[in-house]
Length: 198
Image (tube, rainbow, N blue to C red; front, side, top):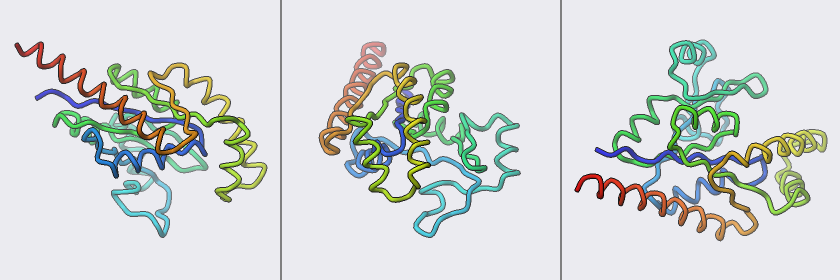
């Protein structure tokens, strides 16, 4: 059976990548499955085990790293976050397409393991709009927002290594463009496989 396509989405906090991923899954477009990341942080009241994250202990997470079972991982605020390799490989081997929502550092590491992965980066319309969105969320102090903006500048530099860049100015329009891009990649792969099978 032909393998599915691995799509990776990144973008700074406030660009709406989480909402975009939810919309892509809701629309059931392109037969895409979201890979659930693992984390060592505590589960929050509105989160669901195995849906939001796979929650695990620090010892178990480090054991997975030592055994080479993580595609990528990072540490934020003392908590580990990462993508289990087997879960992604299993879905791809079934011919299904996988969507990962991860940071550029992790995305570029995964790309080195899966060179055929399609990298998509979400940009805000402007820095001013990004700052406004972060403020409206009400999750961070002004100082933390400044840190997010500074981190975003580094991420924008990494975006040049991505296959596709999308500006999230209008959410529905952005989702539509991403769906069309994914559809073209999937149809192209299917056509190539068909030609090779003849």
